[in-house]
Image (cartoon, rainbow, N blue to C red; front, side, top):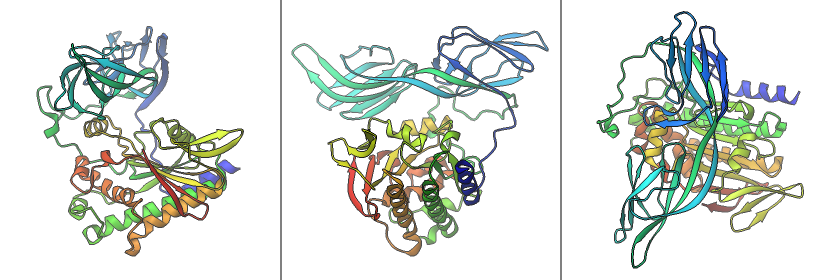
Length: 459
């Protein structure tokens, strides 16, 4: 009954979720190293010892053999993040919901040395400038300063942080902290083939940075998504409703009044919003069990409720880079900072977690359909803590509507929720209006049961 009540509340508050595309024929799950035979209405797929590989155009892919029943043709056809077909043009094969084994290690390399998994090579170490140039297996070069983090794509892919440059009498070494992500399982989504319009993608020799990305489609990408636990208490659902209503109210005010709304730090917003083809910009809601592609569900994702009640919140809480974590000890939950400061009882947290920390990563994600800019965890140690956090966030979103300036700790989030609307005109114009969203640190705002801020921790 609780589940039904939650669904009814969400349905009444927000627009309904989009349905799965009618072109999907079947979805199969694969695990690295396993062999499969999948039967389709018009074809048979065979995979021998499933192996994940990488190509700069396709992204991550898995080789397959496909036999077509009508023609008798057999093709070596990969399934990839981009989506692949073959000369029979019957189906398109997409690789989705990729899961990774992850590990982290310190790597020290001299110039022209590779990391242990041959993901990148050190091309140059400049001790005086404090810079290192690394090159991926696929030829992409990145220049790094101390404490810079960059993504290097391949199998495995790696998040590389330059820790230091060290010298002795004989050599220079660059010290990196590397997090590796090795794909180990995924879904193959088979869709009916549809003729594509001529590609406007740049040729390999073109500079992709000069190309303009297409506007996002507001019928497919919500401006914000509220995620609540399927088995959450009614209080969490009501708290999530507070956040959803406030966010939608703010979106409506911004899009309706455009340039007439004065938002600190967002000069030029009105002109950008005036070019948006559709004004149907909405927040939406879903259950934690419905989340399959976290990067694709919305521009900003608000996860309401703690890790015990919300699987999406639990996923966020598992990140190692958060300045504050939910920690369970002897059956009791605490909020704990990296330095060991601890809260128990009716406390909550509003945590702003950027999804990307690099402009290149941001652009690549967009081209792959990963539109998420930020996660916002709004949760408490109990229902009163969650409610207090949601109530505070609601109030801050409604302040500009009443011509009141928000608390400085929320200004970035409120600006960003308006700023992302420009992406429906031109995705990359988000860098032309307001601050750079990739530069915002992870910020945790601790609140008490009365909705008062007691601590702000960044990391």
